[in-house]
Image 1 (cartoon, rainbow, N blue to C red):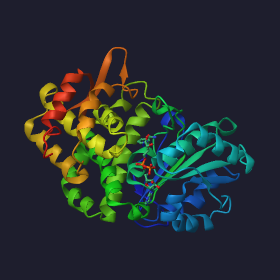
Image 2: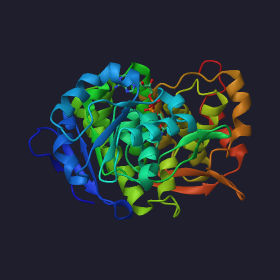
Image 3: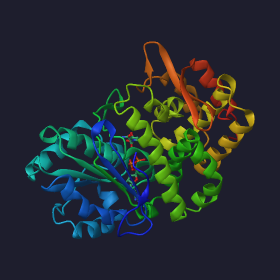
Image 4: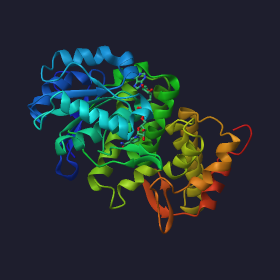
Length: 376
Ligand SMILES: NC(=O)c1ccc[n+]([C@@H]2O[C@H](COP(=O)([O-])OP(=O)(O)OC[C@H]3O[C@@H](n4cnc5c(N)ncnc54)[C@H](O)[C@@H]3O)[C@@H](O)[C@H]2O)c1
């Protein structure tokens, strides 16, 4: 992976490049990163580009998008809209989007710009992969989860009645511009929920873990420089895993699922009332306990990491229906196979591995994490 450097022209931007499965991807993070859009697009595809977004995202951050597009004559100024959040990740919405793109004149020398959170990114990425058998996609994430995680890696998806993200392809973005100013309008809960993936990456990376003490308080205060550093470090952790295993077939990318085996089951059991990051936070807390029991993680480290999760994400107490329902949903999210459940365990920060685990052990982990205490 090319080393981080400061982007020319805009002070305070962090940038790196990598090429998963041979597809070059440039990543720029920091306040004002959107200014890099106009100069970069013609080098990726010379034709017409189309922005995909949702109305609430445009209400919150349309002005910033407009300013970036003023310098980008190759981009159609009128974004195509998908329904907000999960409602946008349906076959119907994907079909309308593909119709819209082709009706508006998308050609093979053009591309798609996704402007929104992970849901817009997922459906716009899939539309880009399918339209005309594939055009380039550029990701402009507007939530912390998307900026630190989903915008990079190329996973695209829509939901099926049988479950979330069950139909999709891997289509690597050519450019990810994580403009951290866009995160200013995020509600507190969405920001904290997004921190779950950041904390996850800090557990997966020894250097990030050692740095975290200096960042935690500043992330709590949403200090721009700390947010930009944490997003960059998280994206680099993800980029390393994606580069090693672009199609998630070799087990290397699976480490990014830390906290997600339990997290996805909780999220589904809550009927998505629990935000993704809140569910992942409980998943991390459970896995830290399982790792003490089964992977040699010390009590002291587990305590320190659990404090990080609780302090920054502040996952809400789990209601009785969620606690009753989640074990039956384990493994229904593509993380299981015919041999049983797998989960990512931690020996120490920077040392994680995939292991087969019994559902009972995961239930015990969540219990030990305090989820079943009325006061938790
Ligand atoms: N492709 C991947 O690798 C990957 C990884 C993790 C999650 N995901 C997917 O990401 C989705 C969740 O993404 P998300 O958490 O970003 O949520 P989201 O995209 O559903 O957005 C959540 C809400 O935030 C609003 N919003 C977005 N940006 C805003 C801003 N700057 N200011 C104010 N409000 C804003 C949106 O309008 C929406 O109502 C899920 O569908 C999940 O499956 C994908």
